[in-house]
Image 1 (cartoon, helix red, strand yellow):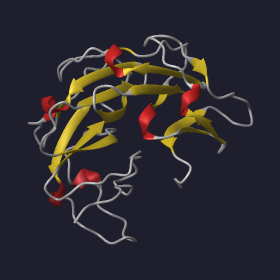
Image 2 (cartoon, helix red, strand yellow; image 1 turned 135 degrees about the vertical axis):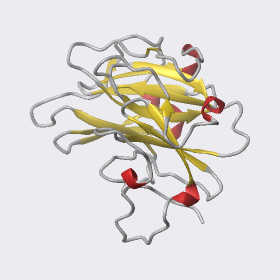
Image 3 (cartoon, rainbow, N blue to C red; image 1 turned 180 degrees about the vertical axis):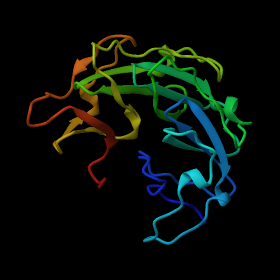
Length: 230
């Protein structure tokens, strides 16, 4: 039996619906740049209306450590990559096989500078277009090949040049949806065609994708969607 969604893992916000099987491993990436691994069957199965199991009962997380992404890991994963993004605009691309032997107690997934955090991890096929969206409504699109593949314990490179006070709120994959849905702190939403974001070199300031006003507040997050999604 598969597990669809893991929205009740403590108060953490898992951004993607997850489909997996009991024979897969699940890799849990945290804001502190660590990765943990569990077999899917180690997570107690529960009903649709149940509250779920606190993640701290399954993983040895440090205080203030929160899950930011969950990636299933099965067989025949060679040729795929993990793309990571941090709050301060760094990105890192690493072959997924580098994380094949993660221990249950966790390992470093990325080297972070002071006050930086890992905010998103996506699995790619090596030729995806990556979008970064910031708190102040900027967006940059670049090809993942612009990010040189590095090993597990590395810092990554500049994905986006941020102005003072701005932070990356979301990383999305162009092919994961026809539209980019952006949501603000005060509950406003905006849907824009992905094709309106032209690719450029990584490390730039990007383009304005959301007009920040007193009514909207800053950007809270972004998601690649299609018209039939809810």
